[in-house]
Length: 386
Image 1 (tube, one colour):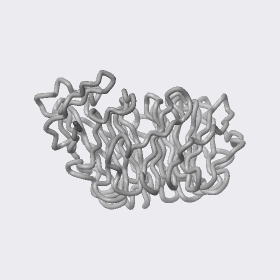
Image 2: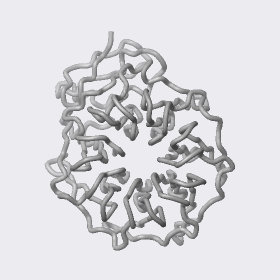
Image 3: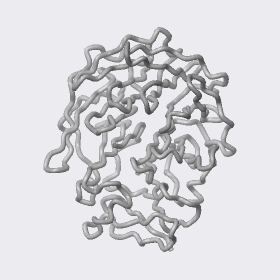
Image 4: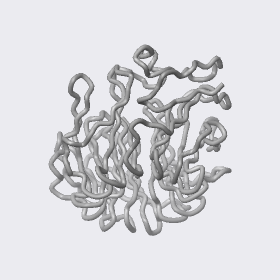
């Protein structure tokens, strides 16, 4: 028996599994609202999924929750045409108060503030631009977990621009003494906000900085002994801050480092590598999963870190349907139960669920969603949730 998950806005029922080691999947209909916590941690708290898109309106967001048990794609009318040009990445500040979008036309980064009206209805309002803007197309953007720092990777020198937030004001910090060697494509802060990794063009392909929060100074660390094989597309830290993964364009397509103090040592490649150029990479919040979005079917590779190492789990074998095109972006839900995959080709967003308590096999209690209603309007080049 196979459960179906037919879109967040078109759900009637999902059979409950009889396997004790499987997560219980429930309907999002109002009559099942009391069980919504099996999928989302708090049915009375809106969860928002935002994607940076390749075409206008360049930002698309879905709100889920508020006790309504439904999804809602809300518009960007309150920020008008502020997001100019192709949006390449998006980042929510941890509390969901601020949203930053990296994009192709000046000001290259747009920062919005979210407010909630009518108990759950989300509204985005554009903030004033920072006094000093990134100098070129923004490719990657990331808030630190404490919400104090915002990093933007971009095409021209200094290749990364870092801001410090005070209230709704973002002030550029002094550039690091040693800059990344080429165009910046991805940025990621360690969970404690001490380390900043920048994935970029030109060797060493990843540059790692350490932040002195007393002086707000970023100092480049020594390069890892073994570097990524080519241009770094995106990078991500494990939730414990002990691993750093870099997605890159040539084999092995993902390089994983283990951190010990300020030293980063490459771990053995997974036995099964991503099938094509790595475009994005992320860890689940519980630290169990590593996901890589890439060119070439199956378009997303999933690795289980249970027991140490990175063990490949075939999405096609365990979860059935594959994304319909090149994987461009990946992110996990806050409870680590759902993997969102942004990709080329309609419907542009695919979900893999039931990951939090996955114990192998047992297809009946997992859903794979290629029918979001309404679907995104274009390729999701970056995606984030809060």
